[in-house]
Length: 363
Image (spheres, rainbow, N blue to C red):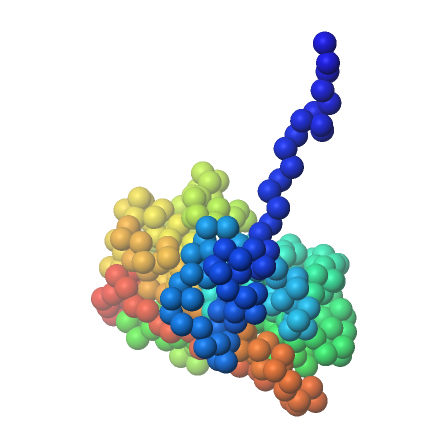
């Protein structure tokens, strides 16, 4: 009995169809196929010829050889993104906008993730550069000197950062959100409703962005001649979907139960925190917003939930992604490498919903 080795019986994968095969199937020259595919302005093929080429492409399952195309153009037609956070709504929306804008210009996107680790960030930047990314958007970590990012810029690679201009002061094109202004607009809104005893809710782990939001809130309290807002620093983290552990809910309950009649507003540094606090307060018998107003931050999908429509400072992440791509494209088109860095700061937009609607009783 003959025993066949698996490798001898395994079928070979189908050969990838070539442009020449498309040309033969369509009954045209290879150059005509190339002109139709690239939509060349000097292509004078008739509509019938163009349709024949498209039918042949569909029938054969032809895909252009991107490596060859990249070599011809001198570009890889890819943009890299170095993220330092995932499952964070503004970061996700910025990336989605970046990817859409890149794709609309014929570019694909490679993304990496460093959990706020400077060494991993440097390794990821090397990986993106080694794979020929034509430009890179980096959301820099909180720590480190970001030497590889600066070296990439010195070598002439198109680079831009997100939320880093004021935080790090790097001489690189940057698009940022003015989180200090966002914190101010939330506090000003609460005070305009007659709220005077404000609590700021945050997670125990602070970052520069959150610190800016808190500083903005406190600046308004100080200018109004009011005591600083009390800080609720939760020792637990909510899941990205806003699912709170029993321990987290108990922590919220204990804090506010001890302050009934003393706190009339919550300014949370994120929509997830605001939504969780609002849920616990309602369960405990607080009326929102009559007893206490609750405001979030970011303008995430969660803020529009019908369970608790949140007033929030909407983060213009969509605009940030678009501007980041425009910055990279400008550099790649041959912008003066010695020009001053283009640094754009966007302002959040206040969205008022039911969680703060109405006025508090006179203090």
